[in-house]
Image (cartoon, rainbow, N blue to C red; front, side, top):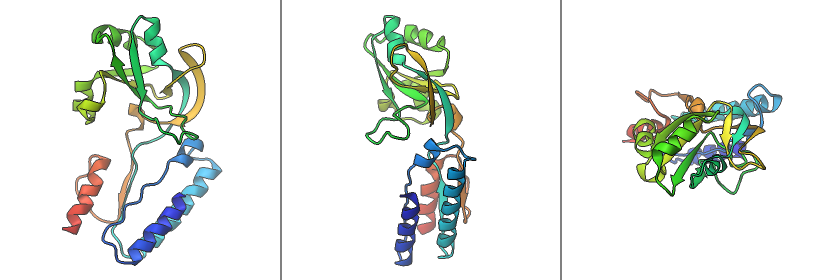
Length: 214
């Protein structure tokens, strides 16, 4: 599908559209490691499609929404907190109907508390192996530019090899998956054939392109 999307982008560029936005899936990156034959073949095909776009004398910018790492430990935080007498609702950051590649397992979760006992909950979470950072909604909003109204009471981020989600019997179990969502997938490329100015975040890419059109 991603390869086809670049052909669609070229189709519209050739017909004079001022701006074409292409959003690809990350299926390949979830399934295959960077140095695997499948991943290398995929990136070679992407490079080929990008070269075709560059031949059209178009300004383009390429970035990503996140990195990707191998995960080996899964933690069920809702079950863990329940074992400590804390009633909560834990919402994964990755949750959609198309889950064949990520299984709705990500490196951070939003925690909503029924008892609002933030201090006690933070103590339990910080002491849990695999939990790297626990932020209140205000801290997450300030430090990670997340919308205050959508973060819950706490944001929990895992270690590099950790994802959060449902488990079978115990709150912690082994897993083999490639996913994202922790602080360890923050660095992403920003590639362009034009000077976009000072780009600090991937969210700055599109506003920079808009300025070129005005």
